[in-house]
Image (cartoon, rainbow, N blue to C red; front, top):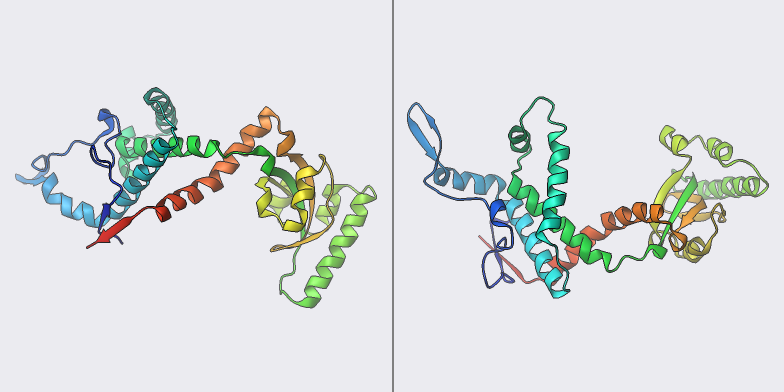
Length: 280
């Protein structure tokens, strides 16, 4: 745990969270009484040391992430209007309030260790991150595929040879006109795989073996690729769609897939490039 962090990149005009709208900035009065027990008062100031010890690391990490994203977005002239952030925040709060299950909104937030200010800061970080990453979003670098996997459970040479033989036989059947679902069923896949028909959805081309990336990116819908060795075993890929020919509906699926993997990598890059001093 990091008990205390000095952020060397701190904004000159104020604290790390100074860009938060005033209504989402927590008010702090150490003398404020939280509760009384048999007439004995407990104040915020008296609880501060316990809260810092118990949850301080979380606050530090989220505050640091917020600051780094805000600064990087400003460098790239990427902005997020207050109206846009408020509209999305209201939308998400409405979703929470629609699933209270007998509790009040405040009780749900409290039980999960959240407050409106924390949720807003998280949302703003996410939305601003998305705007920065959208500048590097290239749909043509994605492909939607289904797959049939022939594993090599024990990692042996004999197991690999067996998987290759089975994959080649299946590929020959498919090329001869055999139905995908029937060939898939012969591998006795898990129920979830059977239900999805081996569909793994949109994935970045960079996640596939280098030997098939170019073919995947240029393939036509429904095209089969020859069996290839991956970390999962031997796989046959069937191209469902390519990002280069993406429709508006496709883009609505690709972008979330892109952001899901791009956000953590982006935040790590910012953190690695920052001068952060820890003490205590």
